[in-house]
Image (tube, rainbow, N blue to C red; front, top):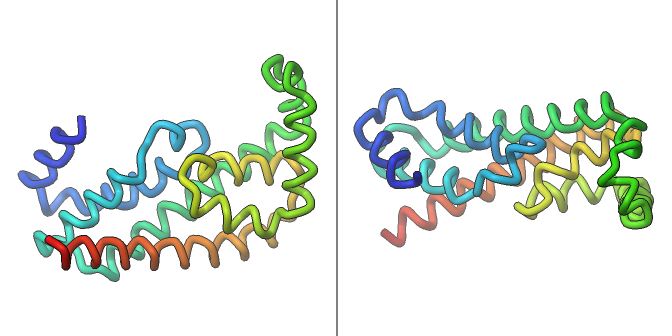
Length: 166
């Protein structure tokens, strides 16, 4: 699949720039993010920069917008699901683990926003868990903007570093 995506990008450079936003959103989106590797975003971004189809500032901005939208979507899905989450059979069977996770998220919620943004395996789950736990919406938005800003700058540094290596 990855060669198909990269071949398509090479053939359609002008219309491929929005893929940065789409992959940043998908990587952060609850459910989808568990199956979308961040390597796609890094690869697409590096290719866009290398082919001069997008500047590093555009890449960083699109990644920021996509990541923020994905996180916010996950957070509000979590708020919408709320207490119903604990009625799911899978969750009921692992009630102790989920209770411990909820306690940790309530205790370290502010840090969880940042930690979750930088750890791919949990990136799409943390916003939803914060929403489920009833974390403050304004605080989440503020912290998420900061976390996504740092993350998009880190992405830019990685893309620039890869571009300089090759």
